[in-house]
Image 1 (tube, rainbow, N blue to C red):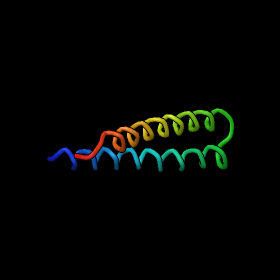
Image 2: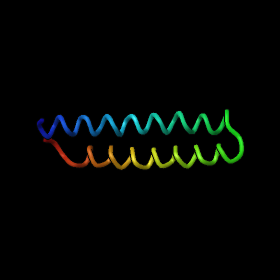
Image 3: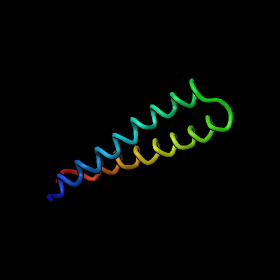
Image 4: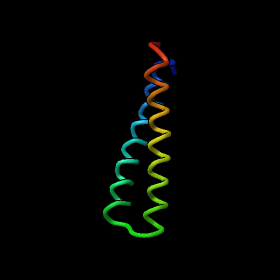
Length: 64
């Protein structure tokens, strides 16, 4: 695989993590209560941070 193709797959993983973060935040705010809401929120924010780091890396690593 070429470098550009590998970067594409990595960026897809980052995008999926960002969408998972959105879904988990909505789930924790509107459907869950108590301890489970806190656990899901922490997981959502971890997905958001990891996805953001991946997208930041892909965008600022330059053209292939």
